Image 1 (cartoon, one colour):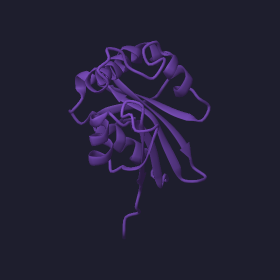
Image 2: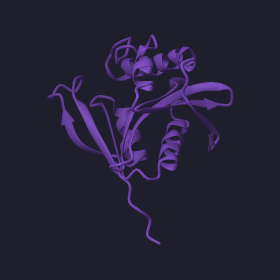
Image 3: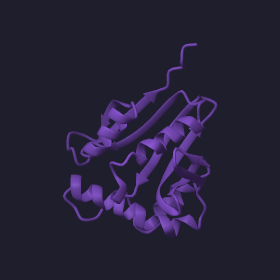
Image 4: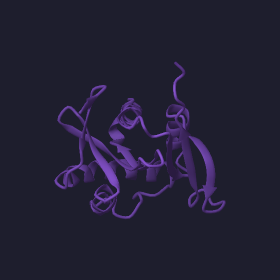
Length: 168
């Protein structure tokens, strides 16, 4: 489905090989910027096993994101319709395209596609300042907890966004 110039398609197993270099660039870029490392995390981000494990988890809904014919990222969501809650398990955009609004468009797609979800949650490393700006300032999340101690390289920000119904 097309949304604001990007195509979102349910992820297929054959998408993994196309998404590996995109995810590797995105996570390696974060590792260099925020962790002073040359390789990123989480385990399996660079060989497809992360996408295989989480993108095709029985509780996940995963999308490949395309700009024209080019794969530029992916989203992994966990939707709990019964409780009207959603968890953003992973979202990445090719590091070559950061700052061009594609991540925000992807998040807007999620909210548009799942209007029944009243509360969204996610987490991100405490040291990933670019992610903080994106989730908090662009997407409207709030930090609700910090877990993992005081070491900013090990701590995780727990984020939440409550969707308010529009007044009619």
